[in-house]
Image 1 (cartoon, rainbow, N blue to C red):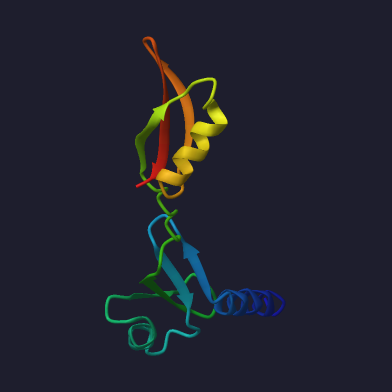
Image 2 (tube, rainbow, N blue to C red; image 1 turned 30 degrees about the horizontal axis):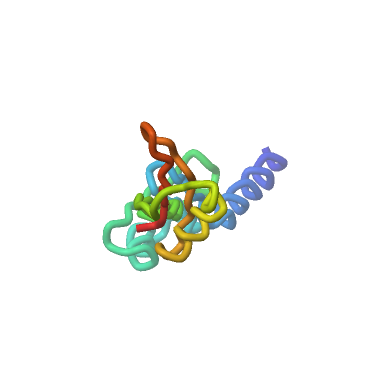
Length: 129
């Protein structure tokens, strides 16, 4: 029995010092606050009034666990909306490279390409809105 107590105590200490475990799915974090003495008060003082505490008695030395809302993962920035425009007609004198240059000059961040529509070869532009 005496050998089990130090191992359990060591595990309890490791849990205490593994400070914050982030569970990103529910945006709930867990903080081990040590012994269960004044567990709820210490939890609310550290993580706010919406936090909830629980005294884990499954270990030899009961451990105060504090559950609180934590920031979720940083959202991926949404790509800019793409708008379409026109810059005239593509021809032998103004091929794809010329169309691309015209679109870049006409629309901030724009690029162009030639696209055939019926009998016309149009210079079409795409640019961030």
